[in-house]
Image (cartoon, rainbow, N blue to C red; front, side, top):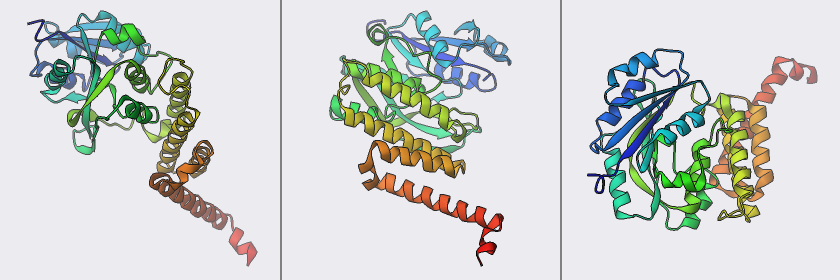
Length: 320
């Protein structure tokens, strides 16, 4: 059993998600791949999480710790894990039944691979489908890294599964990061191991108003993303560490994402500031369809907002 179906340790970090954590646990217990251990790491929840998961006590391991953050909770689970493979499921997400089985088949076919991800589906708090999050593979490690350094093309923690040996090579999740910890870990793993991606969705990712990726967290997100980029390019053994142009492109892309988030939240001043920073790091990006369209929308909104302020203060009347 162990040789053909290795043990997979599933880590479910949670903090005050008692209202949905059971859905996550159930989605693991209904996997078609059955050689699993399930570890729920409660990161100091103040709700009824402990009581909710109590009914699974014969099928899971429950670990409680004082609140230390998502990365620390994941690391606690990894340290507790007995399996040769690690799969993380955020407690507000749900796996489709064949998720682990399909990924383990890829590991069996490609033993040199260290990490496997998959596409996903974004749903709202009621389970309504919002969007598809497609992911695809890359023809070479260089192509993967050139894309991964700018944005998380591997996707979130709930999508991936990786060999436990990767942790011995690259270390645990960075507990100094309050976001982008997935991206940081995938960069480190991909630098040393091959990566495969299953291009159809195997995860439902719940998007809530309080998620870290919301527009209101744009500044915090960007600060952590800059940390990840600087950290990667300071490593001498990294594939792209000597490429100054790739670093500038990566910073440009992250600033443009922050600009978009500020624009969505109607903070036109901050949107304009960040799109200008994006062009500062990579002036040629203005010729890309994405950047040109984003710049046009931000400038238009900024001009219209400025004109609206002039009218509200009676500036137009004074000029007549």
